[in-house]
Image 1: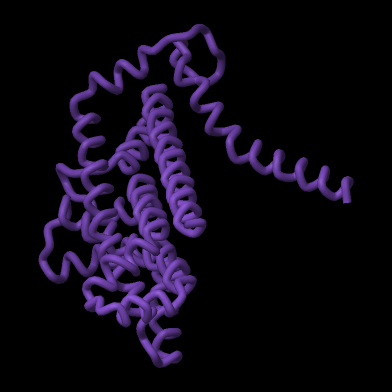
Image 2: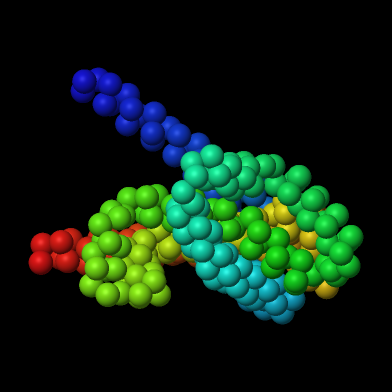
Length: 267
């Protein structure tokens, strides 16, 4: 058993090393004064200064954050409503069909989804830009929220709802005071997942961006095609750190909700 445990730990260390080594390599050279990724000549913050002095890049960062926040909020609302609708469907076949349709959007290749949106927006006359990117991000984020919220709804005992109704609660009160508080961890998980997917998405966004509007992922791709610049390293490092902060924030929110739930159960 101990031998298997050591092998498992070594395997995990190896996997994480392979995954994180390129990221730390990129971060390391973002402080290189030499301007290349071949030899570290000295420590500098000039590449980070260039990022913050580039007005166009700051506007793109703002665009990315606005798209991510708006799409996450809207997709969370739609995803919660969708999860509730699926949960309260009585026919098993209908429920399985809805779940399958939801899951297909998650496993479908991003290139196909992006191309489909491009054709759709072109056919119905939506100009490529802010609106097309926002709608696309909402569309691929909703299924993620549904998947995160559904387990909490299925975990919730029907006796809670029955007890609330017996005490005279209306449907609205049951939803707002019983169901939503119980599934709050799933809602937060769905929101943060949607936010992360929106910030990181490239393939779908690449298809639906238009002239004059772009996001960070597409901009980084464009800069990388022009040649190696350590400004990309600095920008990528900042994005990675923001993502880490989001993960830490989600962790603390989850821990807080678990403590509150534990106190409520003990009472």
